Every structure is written in structure tokens, then in C-alpha cells.
Length: 238
Image (cartoon, rainbow, N blue to C red):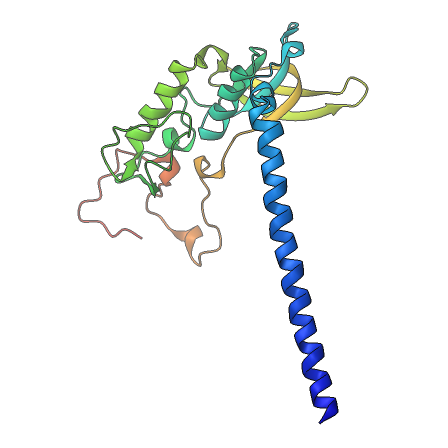
């Protein structure tokens, strides 16, 4: 009987101890948040941090940039806009297509649309209240990205119809040597930072493990390289 009472007492003590620890954790958490609000928000440290400028990033030399961005889809454009927000124009965007948009330019197959609600699939700093559909269509998403490109003056930073063929880190200079190709001509660009803003959905990837595909004599078309000349009438489509 005495052992049972002792066990219950220990269990009660453990529960009480756990309750005290959790209560202290909550109190300390609220206190920390309160002091963070006092010193960071009210004293303006957050605003000073948000408004800082990359003044040292504007010392531009020929073919040398503070940042080089690969791709002008959502990721690439978003990074470019934020760099300008930080006060630097010393960056370049390399885009292999002739337009911005990334996957939303490359994919033009019938019915192409996003599976994320339109109000979420957009930049938080550039909301669009005029989406025509709950799930945005390819053409309208492309127009939205074109709008952002022009509104934030990014187009002049973009080098279109250009492909990155090689990246090499130069240790003694602490920069990237980026080889790009345009119109069958290659040149080298140097950048302190390289941002990979390219996505896999703009690349056509054909399956090779389907039995008999090597003997298929019909036409094959990928959604990322849609051929609008194909007539599907009276044809079996796999």
C-alpha cells in the first residue's frame, strides 16, 4: 500500500514538474516576443534592416556583375526585383528564350494552366485582383510576368536568346566565370553570385523505358515543345 502511494506521489510530482516547465517555456516565449517587439519594431531596427542598400554592389566593370541570374521565370524575376529593391542595378539575367516567363512561356499545350489558386501563385508584393480564373491559365500567367518585368524595370537587365553552357568558380578572385552562348558565339561573364532560377518543367524529357518506343513510327510531341501543326483527327493518341 505504501509503495502504491509513493508511486502515485512520484507520478503527480512528474506531472507537476512537466506542467511547470511548459508554463515557464510559454512565459519565456511571450516575454522574448515582447522584448523583440520593443527593441526591433518600436525602435525601428526592422525598418533600417529592410531599407538597407547594397551600395558596394554597384561598382560595375565590363563583363563583371554583382549577381547573375539564370532564367526569367517566377524565381529569376523575383530575385531580380528584390535586388533592385536593395538598390543595385549591377546584375544580369540570362534567358535562353526570347521572352520572360520560363515554364509559362515554354508550355503552350491546349488547356495549360496552374494547379495552384491564382491569388497564391503570384508575387506577394504584386497581387493581381483581376485573375480571370481561380486556377490561372498559361497565357494569363505569362501576361502577369510580362507586367512585372516592365513595372519593375527588369527587361533592360535581361539577355534573351542566350544559354549558359559552363559555370566555373575562380578561387583566387572569389567570382564565378560563366560561359554563355548566343547566336553561336560564346563569351565569358564574371559574377560574384550566381542564382539558379531555371526550372525543370521547361525542358522536354522524353521517356526511354517504354517497351517498343524505339519502333514507334508516329509523331511524338512534348508539352514543353508543343507542335500546333499536329492534326489529332482520327488518330490514336497515347
